[in-house]
Image (cartoon, rainbow over all chains, first blue to last red; front, side, top):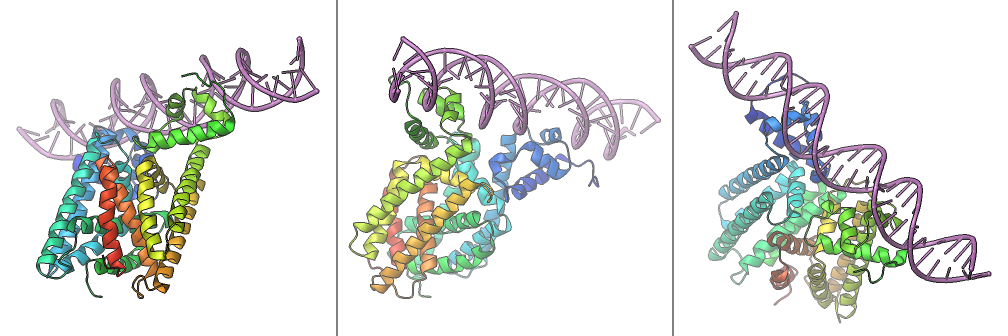
Length: 201
Length: 201
DNA sequence: GGCGCTTGTAAGTATTAAATCACTTACTAG
DNA sequence: CTAGTAAGTGATTTAATACTTACAAGCGCC
């Protein structure tokens, strides 16, 4: 270590966020201390507070990082798809791929879920989920419009089931402890989900 | 207070478990301290350790309580159903009903999910989920046998989506903070899920 | 080359947690 | 009535934790 003793706050913030996400892949995010983060970065614990005022600020920044990067992947998947149905499939697999690439991310989100409603971090998570649902509903409506899925499909329920399907896969991988099977399981679950929308496989 | 100052270990254990589940409905289970439990029960903190050796023993007992009572509801739902498809519907709604009746229960389970694989409490959760999946797979296979659902349905994926659908509803209610909508949302999601199995509504 | 700002360290503080311990009180059997 | 046992108290111990502070040292700028 000690290659780059001094760095800018900006790069240190990014490093703290990345370390938090990385450490969350194996341990419970709630139990990760500022000392843990500092040790993993090769600095002292007090140094963290040069870059974030409180630990809650770290958690908020982490949630925002997840939002930004997940949404980037989802939008990219959507935009490279020729139609709404292909977009749904691509978004599903992109989300699963993100969870596989960053196993700490869903753990962090689940951890924030537990917090009281007043917590600003949880409010951010609420906002993220709500926007996600909206995007899904719109895409589902577009797919209906293009006669790619059942005309009588319930968009709200379909959006809920989309998210639930992914969350179920993630929980399953959290239980087993390895993310390898998740992607292949995802294919089967996605197939079934599409059948619910009246898509022939 | 102070109606029944002294009670048996057995009844105190039950009271501790019930208090833990109740308090988990509003706060993060990981942040509930032995002092919180004791205060809610009207005893001193030290008294808890007359009835459980460690806090982890409390968590284990809580998980076992959830297992016992949830499985009871699921089996009851299954047994009062004339066929496998009706059983699936009844189990789905029974599980959602349980989550509504005991909002702390899913929070506790999600909390244990975060723990390292070596934790005995998490191992118990793993076991519970595995048995649940098996039960679902069997019921799904029986439904195929009876030609109540698509013959080419992937039972493993269908079991995963069943659990995911419920977990998605629970997460949604944890986000919004109220369980009222959950049951009516569940009806829509269940309908969609059944469509995936080729059931006409 | 000195100056000021930023980033770092090392030590320290206040708080909170689970667990323990000495002691007390209620109930029950002989 | 008395002795034993189980349940409860309240004070204490030990170990962490988030955050602070006094001081040191690098970096850009003139």
